[in-house]
Image (cartoon, rainbow, N blue to C red; front, side):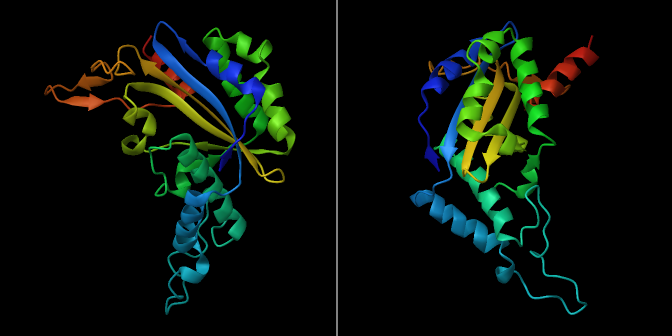
Amino acid sequence: MKFLEYSGIEAINSALVFDTPECRVYGRVEPYSCKAAGADKKLYKQIENRYDQSNSPPDNEDGSAGSFRNIISPFGPLDQPASRRTLFYLIGTLNASFPDYDFSSVKPEQFRKEPSVSMVINSINATLLNHGKEKVVKDLQIWDSIDTLIQLEDSDVYSYNPESDSDPNDEEGGGTLWSFNYFFFNRKLKRIIYVTMRGVSHGVPSEDGEDDFSDESDDENGVGHRRRGMRYEDYVAGEMDML
């Protein structure tokens, strides 16, 4: 995956890092071309070897298909090359965005195809407006910039929901209260826009290396447990339930 330079993104990304009374928010918008680099070619071979029907066991004696046949995913049946290629693009984007982390073992079911582009845009806008970042939507025109790069009306949107023990955000210091990861994918242009935001507890380890355990809570036996990050709307709903 090749990162695409675009002059309008830098100001948007600067505005997507800010503090709130509850947490510090880290957000970024990253445009990529689906052009395979050296490491991507290795990843593509891994995915093909794992899900290509020709590599699956033969049909069983009772006539049922082998274990890798007809696997349904958010991208379609994985016996289809186009479906496997979409999985490859999304995992490749994660690898490019988190170069110190290996996503090659991510499962197809950890992704979800969102119902529509407009629903995702509204959800992200609501998050920004709830945190007083109207500037990103109206002044910096985040969606005009993204549309220029990817043509939103011709794009699909996928989300990534990492498992609690394999979330790179938590490995970057922990304390994640909520997060989202969206991929706007235009197949014709072969481009992906990765949009991610996460809210992190104040005082957790950062660039200065200070220790803090505010992302953990003790159970009744005094054993600490890390709180798992969740989608922002679920986090807000949980806070409202506590009122």
